[in-house]
Image 1: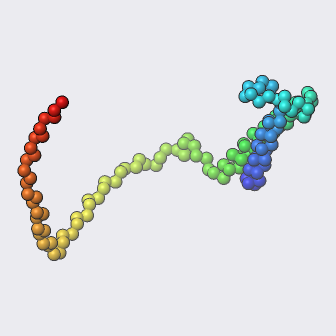
Image 2 (image 1 turned 45 degrees about the vertical axis):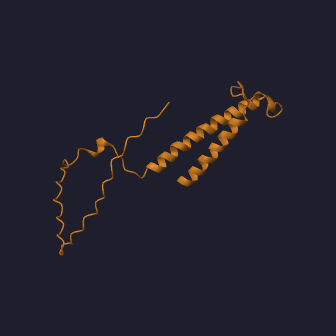
Image 3 (image 1 turned 180 degrees about the vertical axis):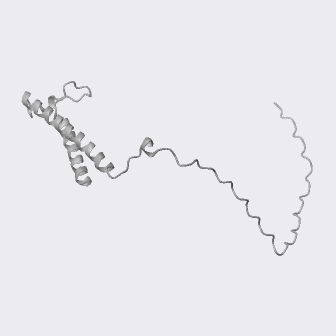
Length: 132
């Protein structure tokens, strides 16, 4: 039922966009004049028909939107804080347990040889002053 209603909703949305685009522009606010289609669908009765069709499609679009919300939420239980009541008991945090002690190695490892020490280099000599 919801899928059928969703398909109808999408078709109404497409029809609503089409009917709105067919209407003649009165203000030309976006630079798109309605004068290019002067011979197509002219007259006062056509404007009334398109306006009425737009209003009907908008009303049906609104109704299908509300119906989709109602159908998708009818199986859910109410989630009001007032209807749920107070919590049974406050939750007390549990103290963390002591960490596990790692086991000692069974065979001691042989001491590693110390890394070789680098020989100290002679101190660097100051550079001669640069002539200008």
